[in-house]
Length: 130
Image (cartoon, rainbow, N blue to C red; front, side, top):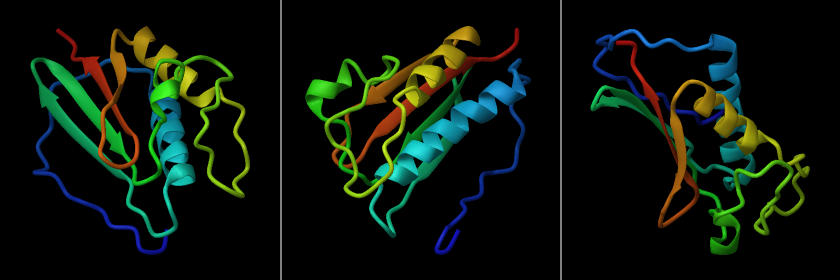
């Protein structure tokens, strides 16, 4: 990816987490796909991974137009497509974020759309193994 930058963490490993690797790959892929699709050319997409309070936290932030307030309560519904669609972009089928929500819930986690000054900010949490 031209112009892509990668950040590096401290390199330490957190506690084990029980996930279906294929489903987690779909989660990250869907979030990334949406972020790239809705960000302007040359925009930045950020993923931040952290652990806090016995949970893994993953944030995905983009520099697109963000989610319209009227769409925020529906954005995780299957087949729902918000009003802020990128001009000239191929329209999706509206199931990506509903799949993300279902896969995260199946792992005992949570998914939220957080307020953001620019772009969309999705925050998910997954519990660590006990």
